[in-house]
Amino acid sequence: MRILLTNDDGINAPGIKAMWRELIKLGEVIVVAPETVQSATGHGITIATPLLTSEVEEPDGYKGIAVDGRPADCVKVAINQLIPGPVDLVVSGMNSGVNVGINVIYSGTVAAAIEAAFLGLPSIAVSLHLDHEIKTDYARAARWGRETIEKILALGLGKGQVASINLPALRETHEPLGVKVVRQCIQPWVDTYEQRRDPRGRKYYWNNSIFTLGETEDDTDVAAIREKYITVTPLQFDLTNYLTLKKWQEAW
Amino acid sequence: MRILLTNDDGINAPGIKAMWRELIKLGEVIVVAPETVQSATGHGITIATPLLTSEVEEPDGYKGIAVDGRPADCVKVAINQLIPGPVDLVVSGMNSGVNVGINVIYSGTVAAAIEAAFLGLPSIAVSLHLDHEIKTDYARAARWGRETIEKILALGLGKGQVASINLPALRETHEPLGVKVVRQCIQPWVDTYEQRRDPRGRKYYWNNSIFTLGETEDDTDVAAIREKYITVTPLQFDLTNYLTLKKWQEAW
Image (tube, rainbow over all chains, first blue to last red; front, side, top):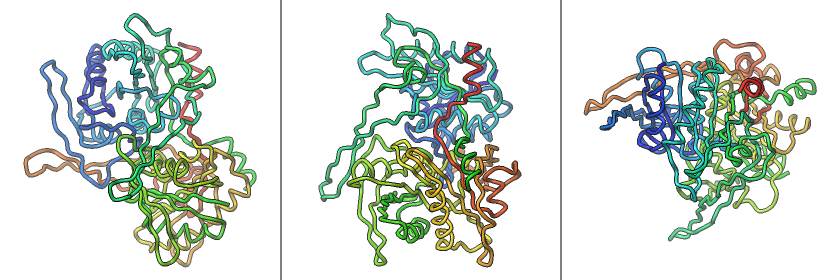
């Protein structure tokens, strides 16, 4: 199996390296990832400027191509130009930060996986919940990620299909309660901003929102990750609201 | 009616100004838009840097607040900080470039409308197809946009509902064939890149894809805009693939 591995935290992030160490157990892994951190860039792409590339190689064997662009750019240029021959699976992550609920829409990690699906490939996003009170063990989380990927592949992940895996934050003495296949929570995330003035009196605003796994219906990704399950959510990229479509088609 | 007007081409773009001139016929219009061009930024948000603001005012009465951020940031900070009192409708556009098919996912114009929906507001994205062989008449297109917005509001656009309007490119002697309520086309867009080398031998890649309204099923936004209809597509932001969800829940 040939796997393209990318992410949105950048090619030098601990999450992608931990994921690489696990995925090489499954096949050949080719890393093409952003040169710099691209968190919360959503599904942006680069059209007005060129994508510079450079090679990364480390003593432990980790190597790949860094692209001066966004996560979706990495997938596009990797498939289109950088990787000769076919790719069987695209994995995006492991992201430092959970991508549940509305975060799915902002996430560069998920955008890379969706881009791969546009291109007709099966793809999986992997994200890890960070809890500042718990020391993050990337190696252990990547193992859970790889095991969940293997299970999804065994169930069958077709061309153009996307799965999003989220891993809970757990102390070293705890294990995940299991895996839950759950829908995306669509409750809003409460935003807060702090207003300040620059030395010249111009107003500016800092986003100081703290992402919390708030109250939600029990069958969602947010609820399951809060309860310390690994979550799996199959995603799609048709944004049509079919119920309203039908209503408006009849009433127009 | 109080309308928040934003876009992704920047506060000085011809499309937002043309839209403003039409929307002031419907009520009070408050413009909060990016300071600079934000095309293809997708649903990015700004969390690591502050959002600087400045006031824009022109002799014809057009005025607003420019935000040094992305389209989704403009909506967030406008609702949260900049606009005192309630907003009844958010309009994003008119974008210079059509947002049909897979472009919906990359579009900053649509991202701003979806952000407004997260925040519980009714919202409408408006995008104009540019054809380099046809002179763009923003004023005329904005009139079609405003008329379509009025029709959607008459049908009823609820809290958290999103509509996306696309306007066809037409010579001055032609009129749209009508309005079609259609689903989003999900066919892939063919990407091409050109590889070059910088003066130091480092490889870089330019995306040289040309967006074309290719072949597609007849009931989609891409087909309708190609046939010179105005298109209306109701959107949603739950990316869960429910068919696969059910299958995997049973099989896991």
